[in-house]
Image 1 (cartoon, rainbow, N blue to C red):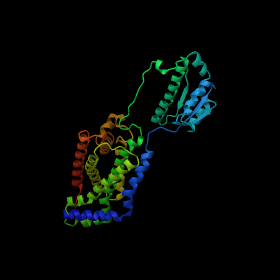
Image 2: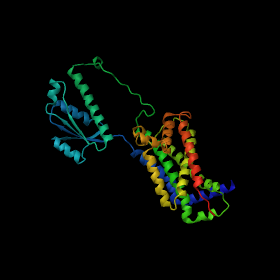
Image 3: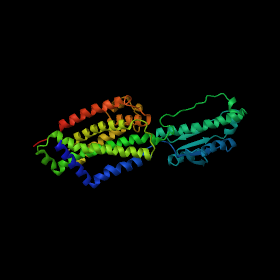
Image 4: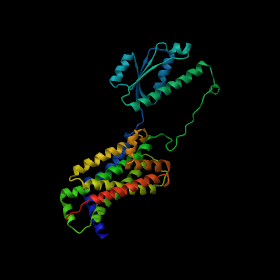
Length: 372
């Protein structure tokens, strides 16, 4: 234990002497969490819509007013022709074009039905789908108002309809930051510990100090524990900083046991440090270690369920995510913080990460060669 303690002291001194690493460890996570949590959102807002009103009637103006007063449509332009609307879409000046026909009011009055044309820029299919829903909802509300007027119904109680009363659990304000902040915190903890641990031993190789350590009587397990333990502590520090920002800045609810979060993170960090050690064992320069670590991080992030639901992925991709450690951490932290899940509900995630940690660290320690 005395040898391990000396190695740990040496590592902490080396970390705190490096001003660049200190900024990387403490300042970068704060900036990334503050910036990414506000920028990484799938909320569709600030929609630009162009309307071609061929009717110029009271009914068409009432429909246009519905779009102009809606907070999601920040820019509503009136155009003269559908060709002009198509040109606006091609140039990226608008997201959707709505064309109201000439006989709009006449058809509503005489036939009780009519149609309008909606053209939506669907380069981003998900965004286009949401925009279509917004437009359809506004038209549906307009239809309800027209129905009431045509039937001369003074009270909505006389209108047969089904009323839906939604109840939003765990995020009743529908704040997207509540969903994103825990996941982004997982990414920051993972990236920093993986990059720092994978580059740590490689740096010793580049400086030539690893050869000096190898000729000492320090045993392999002592060296590995002493090198990785400081980054295990730093990972928990980063988690603490992130949780504090999540609560104080973004008001993320923390309904579950916070000590359960630290328990899971402690085991998860062992897994990530094991991956970093394995990478460092098979690389000779920091550039190589960074490249390989970043390659795995890109795959882990894209297949973690943070930005795209795992249920929407192809079956083969869903099977691959079963080997993605970030997936289990993202699921865990959302379940505990947002749902208040206990140990029984997250036992599967905890067990899988523990098995991964044992397997990866065993492989990493086996692959490390201490030569004299």
